[in-house]
Image (cartoon, rainbow, N blue to C red; front, side, top):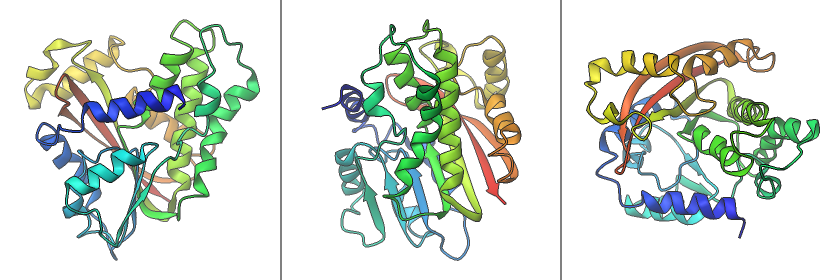
Length: 276
């Protein structure tokens, strides 16, 4: 099996029993996704083991829920743990590479000489996953997936590669464009991403909720955040990229809130995007 896929499976397994620890984070994510009208279809990218999704609540607000991840076993087990394995309106789409590049990237190393074609593919290849999905959808969410996609770049070519920044920017842009492509006209997108963890800022776990926003601003100014997920840069990309900006009717930044992952805590933000 592709080593990068194995890493993602291992990551999902590391939190498979963390349902209780995820409670506050799950409440935040579910609240962002449960609102809609006319029982719209919901598509969730990077659903994994579904610990951050209260599916029983969400199915009351959506005609159908489509869960997408590269790890089919995680999806199946996550839905089963919520006693919804046989629900007619919950659909699992496993084995889908949301970068469209994971086979190529598994051969990358810090010594890889990447071409302009390689970097362009990081933007465009994610569109390949449109075909197997029955979209577009009224609501599409990316749930703490962006940082995982960017981590693939960190784990393959490394931070010292001369094209590291170009590649993570391309992966980010490709993911945001995919998100928008999957939304119906007038529909809603929700990008949720972890920004920083207690690994690099140990006091994060004890920061009072009312102070979390100010602390995150300070951490971003200091450069203490995951590559490619600067909240301001993400919002600016939606507003300035010639493809994205033409599709965006409105943007609503939300958060931050704290996510107890068990071995570490994360600061998480969201951006709600209304499509023109």
